[in-house]
Image 1: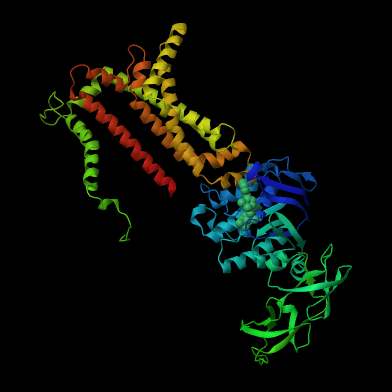
Image 2: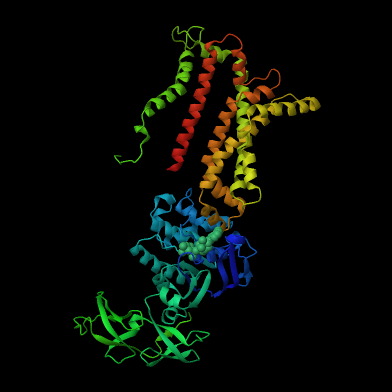
Length: 356
Length: 269
Ligand SMILES: Nc1ncnc2c1ncn2[C@@H]1O[C@H](COP(=O)(O)OP(=O)(O)OP(=O)(O)O)[C@@H](O)[C@H]1O
Ligand SMILES: [Mg+2]
């Protein structure tokens, strides 16, 4: 329902011109929890503000339900924003803040009153309805900002790192609350974060961004298990990178030869890798330790105990340190010792060939 | 408090002495002025006991009454006009995209602060003389217009500072919540701008109340504001009546500053 095609934004002109968004193409579906994920400065806020109407894209198109947005000022767009710093009106009470959108739309007082009451219940802020916004805590402000943006029942809710100012526990609570609100209201959420874990746990789909471009769009499992590029694999979760040679590649399946001479099946990215020497990515929990003579052999350099799991660091010639993660069982006996020569294996099809 | 400092200006020899001298120079004449306004005698230099007589004299002096009324009318009108214009000017210079010559516009708004007042006074005198000749009008409006003009930068400064210090996200949030530009201004910008507007208005009021040079040049025959009336008195024998009027003006200024301070304090809560 949100269709973005060929969207670019260049700030400044001449020598100081800076491309903040480059040829963004994405379709965000109705009722979807869609996340923009990427490191600081990659253009997440700029993209969000383009949808809200505070940034004027240099080129491209943007429609919501088929309706052109770029020709409309912010107040005429059916989207609401939860700002990164909340931007609550300091001279109004909590209830007045929440009712502001409906008031601007010219809704009758009785309707505003009942919607505000509903919203206060929804975010559990009813006891503080008449406080000024400077007299409530950060987490409460965050909920008021959310209620204020939800009250006019927009088609799309834009959220710019709304949880980044909260402490760990409140953040976990709010993640669950946000997810609940999204499914209860049926509103499309476009959510910005640079926290990969938050993105994985909350999203229906994630767009991973870097330097103004979208590198990959997919479901959390998709992105995690099958990162298309090295950057994506590196940014989301922990990954082992192994250099290998591409033997064959067809229909998204590749055969790669590892330095040990063994050949293994891996997934190839959309569009193919198309070159002889490639990098493959293997998640630490997708690999297991085995006897020497496996896909990769090496020397056990380190064993790190984490409580829930144990990490084995393995060194082998010409490769970066490979980490194998094993979930701990109660009272399991450790068979391996630092200095042992061990093998590393993983199932065919679990490794991912990266497009560098 | 006992934080070690690499450089503390108070340790420089003579600093305290110079500072005290400055304060004495600033306030001693004012204290003397206030004290002698209560003098029972007719001298402004020889103390002859306490009395309210010069306040009574000033209060009952018809010329002073007229001048006071004129001063207040001009100061309130000028402050009203200057503040309204300053709000618009401040909005135009802080809430629009950078346009060509915006620096020049900023300089031109503050021009009256830079140009010697006597030059403005002569220029206004000449221009108003032409208008007087062609229309025959000799009323109060020349003074109101002139005062409004030189008050604008004084009103503009605090309003602009307030606008610049405001969180732009608030106005964007209001626009995001379907507020049309004028609604955003009325419901979000203006309520937060009040302290700036108030200080701009008070500053203009005081500056206008106090003006001598431009008023002296622009006023028609028979018109007198408090300062020009006092100036006229100085040419004759000076009595502590002038002290009394000055003290009253001083009291008004202090009252306004205190009122503004309390007002801005209560807004912050
Ligand atoms: N008004 C502007 N003028 C010039 N450059 C800008 C402007 N706004 C943003 N940029 C640049 O565009 C790039 C993207 O900015 P943006 O705010 O979208 O990043 P972000 O992904 O939201 O980062 P963060 O996670 O730190 O919030 C940055 O390099 C920033 O410096
Ligand atoms: Mg951002």
